[in-house]
Image 1 (tube, rainbow, N blue to C red):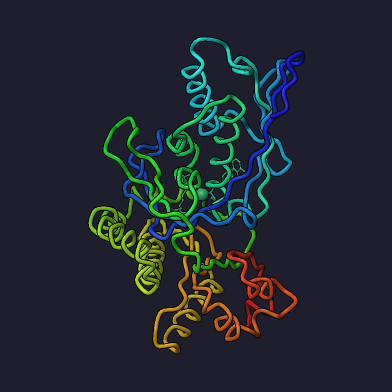
Image 2: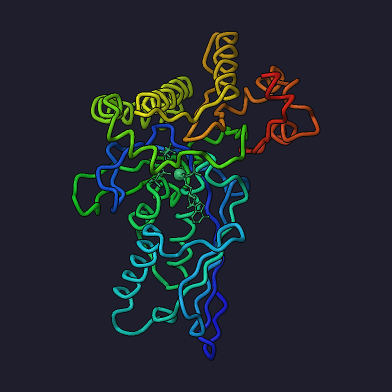
Length: 356
Ligand code: ADP
Ligand code: DP6
Ligand code: CO
């Protein structure tokens, strides 16, 4: 960490990966603290693919906190940004109660870049806020459990604080101190698992996750049923499947949970549409392929956007892409994927969208 005592200047750069929920979070019981109505479980991707990179500088010469996202200055007074800044500073004050840690009385300049589409249903808020909280903590010398702070930036961000398979326990307390993320299994528990991100559209979604889930909580009785009667059982089954590396169960639960999440969006009034025609064609392709194989070898999951996340095992990747060979010409990332990179992003061409 470069530090210049004379200028009182500190700077760190960190990066954080996205995570894709296989048991989805949708709905809050507390908007301000970001407390969910159900627990959720996700897979954290490798940050050599989809990631946020954030640089935080703090200096005596800065007059106010400022933030730039993907090169454009954003409004720092956004309550979620303020929560993260306030909470990390509070932890720093507690940790350094005997003195003034470098920078605690200084302002921050924050510069954050996503190397993938922002607000398109690829969990930019998860990687973004996880990275922000981690970078702020590093610059102020704060260590320890930070998922509670990241959660107050964006719910899904608490899960990006850990790698591998991560659960976010909804918790019971009103102050949210037990609403934390924990690793269920490290990624090394399931080295054969492969993730492919299909970028159907890089455009910003029309309805952000925050407002979409707000309307769902207000209007969808299916969401209430899901949170109370469906998710608790699925969480247990999913944790068992991950620990046993039971792909068929993992895949079926993943697809059913993605489908039920999108069903609650349709049950929302007025309805929210995140999937498009290409998304639906990908869903059909996966089911056709699995049926053809006589077993479940590939699964899909869609967050709040049209982009697909495909899960499969290394042994089936080559075959799945042979089937989809016409969709993935060798000069594209399909080739990269066949070389065995665990995760890759593919932007679908117009021809490809038609073909699927
Ligand atoms: P997504 O599906 O990409 O998570 P959301 O609607 O949940 O979409 O959140 C998008 C919002 O998250 C952005 O409008 C922005 O406010 C915030 N965000 C995204 N990336 C970052 C980042 N790197 N740093 C801070 N905030 C970010
Ligand atoms: C569909 O975490 O983006 O991706 O807490 O309001 O910031 P806020 O919402 P966000 O919602 C994520 C919804 C989801 C499912 C998931 O990631 O669990
Ligand atoms: Co989000």
